[in-house]
Image (cartoon, rainbow, N blue to C red):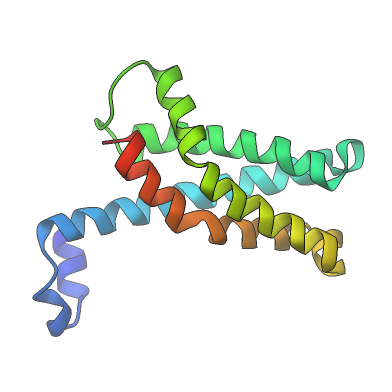
Amino acid sequence: MHSTIYRLLPAPLRRSATPSRLAVFGQFVRFGTVGFAGLIIDTATVYGLRHSLGLYGAGLVAYVTAASGNWVLNRIWTFRGQGSGPAHRQWAMFMVTNLAGFVLNRGTYALLVTFVAAAADQPVIATSAGAVAGLLVNFSLSRRLVFR
């Protein structure tokens, strides 16, 4: 994968494209792909629970469900072979370290469903914006603290 990425880069970027930077970029792409799967889980859960729990309750349940799914996929694909210790501790560490991303993600979600009528009618707008808001923070924390 690294050689393919390297060949696609413009010449000026190739000079700074070290193997370690390409590896981090590959992890980021996998993390983003996993995040997209999490967005689907998040959105489906919100839509499934919004009438029984309301948008805020559904949003909280959806976040925990999606974050747990993301942890599993990141553990077996994005950061395969990295990190140590029992799985339940790694999951707990993932959830705790991603609290900053949670604040950005669910903060964006809550603001949008509260103040933007279209987002309240179609929560996919709010879940998508929230996922983007937390992406970089969650990647950085996961890479540095959970899967090192």
